[in-house]
Amino acid sequence: MTLPLPALVSNRQVLAEIRNGIGLITLDRANALNALSLPMIRDITTLLLAWRNEPKIKGMFVRGAVQEGKGVAFCAGGDIRFFHQAAITGDARLDDFFSEEYALNHLIHGFPKPYVAWMDGVVMGGGMGISQGAAVRIVTERTKMAMPETNIGFFPDVGGGWFLSRAPGHVGEYLALCGQVIGAGDAIAWGLADSYLPASRLASLLAAIGEATIATEADWLRLVRAQVEAAPAPHLASRLADIDRHFCEAGVAEIMASLQADPGPWAQETLQGLRRRSPLMLSVTLEQIRRGRGMGLADNLRMERDLVRNCFQLRPGTASETVEGIRALAVDKDHAPRWNPASIEEVTEEMVHDYFVSPWPAHAHPLRHLA
Image 1 (cartoon, one colour):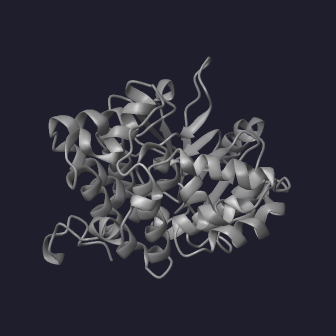
Image 2 (cartoon, one colour):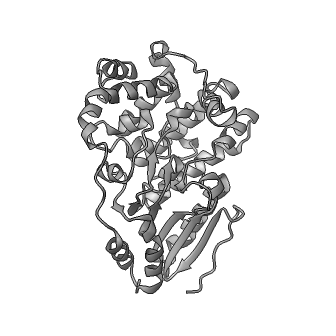
Image 3 (spheres, rainbow, N blue to C red):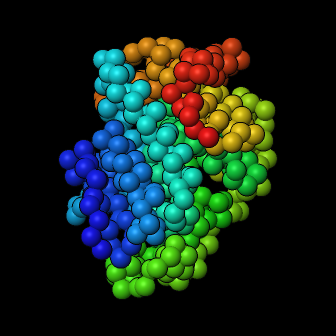
């Protein structure tokens, strides 16, 4: 098939081809675990918009490139070093990044053709944003899935308030607050993936795309589903009762107190992990997940866009919990963030509420057009 590819701007960080009616998108920033840059977000959006109404395109397949000597990743998230520098220097592209990323997330969730995500290796943050809306989310034995944003004084964005809150019981609160990494079995069991295929089978799947008769979108879905295998057993299934018992509590302080009263090693390890995170942003995150449970996707993304703006603007520059968290993890790498407040007891309802106040009137919100 000969179809012209639209002009792309990411300097080949996003590769595109059309194979037998399937639009293949490859994130090719393997030296950074395929973390998303603003030009990459723009290129993926450009491709989806170009192919959305093209009758010769029957579906999409999105994957991450693998580079020898580097870790395997579908997409490790957004470019947090860019966030840090942009927040300190007042770079307007920081606002553009999140507005355009969330619009892309929404586009994927409502994409009218079957969109298949190959979630091999690290799938975190922004990688979840460009995969959770897929018609088929394929995980492998190498999948390491998480929304670890609280580790940098942030919150699980890209629709995390929507898709995490729809996990069974209080798994959403657990994954959001703790940033727990899960594998293929747990991802499928908790509704964050659909199908399993060993990583070694990618070549045969791609070969099948080229050889099969793909006349309709249904043909594409049948081809993919014919390739998948039985999912491995979940590892954390035995913890579901513990998760529900502790993470159903009303607030972060109560969750931590519940864990403290549980002498088991899992509870104590979980508690220690929470104590290393920003008390304020843990509280914001818990509120986000619980609000998201009652929201549609578009409203949730608008809420998260408000939260992002407030993460960087309520306390500008280095006073931001997010800027401080990125500094400690990825810039100075001292792993000693100076959180403010330093303890969960010092966090007030007013502090948390301020993060949910939109800085825009409804008619001027950057995501006002999301349906």
